[in-house]
Length: 338
Image (spheres, rainbow, N blue to C red):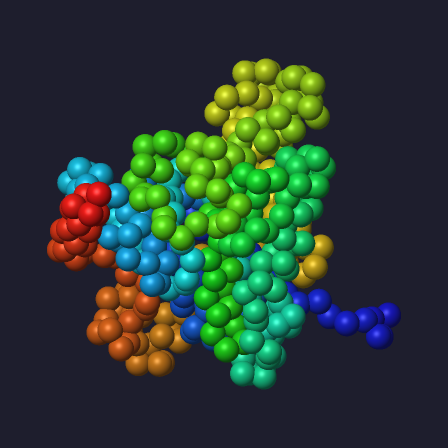
């Protein structure tokens, strides 16, 4: 019965538990890219941290991208992470939703036996691929009118000319990672931790964060209200016991987030076969693969000597204080010129 049918690539979906950690998530994704013995395709989903964490791209310099005086005011309680992928700087918090695709081969997920046998994925082609994958999710969660104005512009996801998602990539031979921080909501005090970047996408036109960003929560709630007409039913069974109260506020917000995750998986299912996996089933084989490569386990690989460690790392206080001193010198020099 299957004669002549071409098997679809398989994507394994891993939903990380709350509180797993930003650095730990990035190290895990880096390990899946470089050391996964099964060479699987992955979709990794996780919520942002309870407290803000600043994440820079691999070549990002804190002096140029982070408001280091504000960082210092947190007195050691604000983590700054440098990830293994390129791209810009983000502040992650409880209002961000994170998704990463770890894929083998191009076209996406075709998974040749050897990565070197695949054409190298082009960053712009990956962005276009992700736009088409996510468009049904946007329509499902936020409505057809939003899907019509959804696009990938430069390194961002936008609705019209306002941003709701930032992207970064790592490409190694035929394998690659495409990860996104989706802005479910945002907090001005978190955005104030970032400097106004010198290099900005053209469409930003020097706009402030307030006029440049749009939170997905607002669009999800508007679409919910349009669908439900204010009834007590609710998304994902948020109604029931408690009636309208259960379908509003925190309960409805969590239901809308769950719908977002589910719609993302459904979007993946339109192009791929999907298998849900548990974290415990992923960690063991990775630990074994790292040990076999002489890199210890995940923790040892994360903390080992530079030539044998993950590229993802937490920036130390001493390094950041040095960057702050340079930042202050740069500001003083600009003031002198003025």
